[in-house]
Image 1 (cartoon, one colour):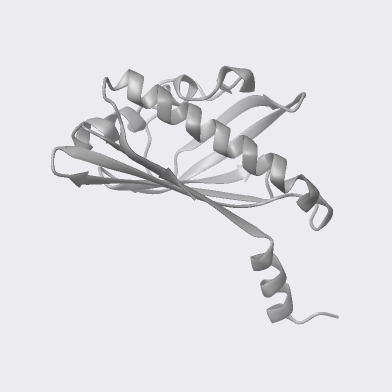
Image 2 (cartoon, one colour):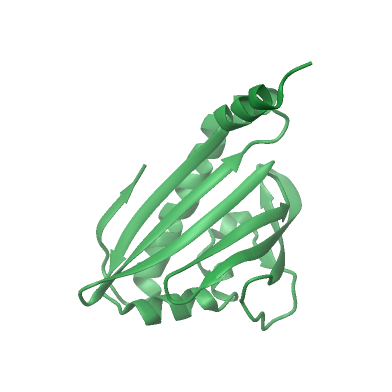
Length: 170
């Protein structure tokens, strides 16, 4: 029998993190307002994911808001349910997966005013399902997440009419 500490260490070791940041020469309140409209999520998701929000619109985003989606990935269609677990306009919000393809998915969106621009910071902490066997898929999953956020950044620059400066990822 393993100890709770050993189980916590094992789950921590299999937790992954993806971060990205971009700066748009747009005021923070305008950027946050864009993200506050759940319909924009479909607009900033790559079309090959066949992303569709199932929750009836409009969705009032606030702490406790629940959103259901359907999307396709690697030839599989699945539903994803998230909860807005933190809502702090215009600074940040957190969406947490309740049901979906990951064992855990917590996405923190932060918005910082820097002069006349806004820095958008994304921090995603996730665990893959079927551990430890599921870890075999990690390189492919990491690549897909990176592609999704690259697409998102390009669309944000286009939709908000701004050219980003200082994009970076880790």
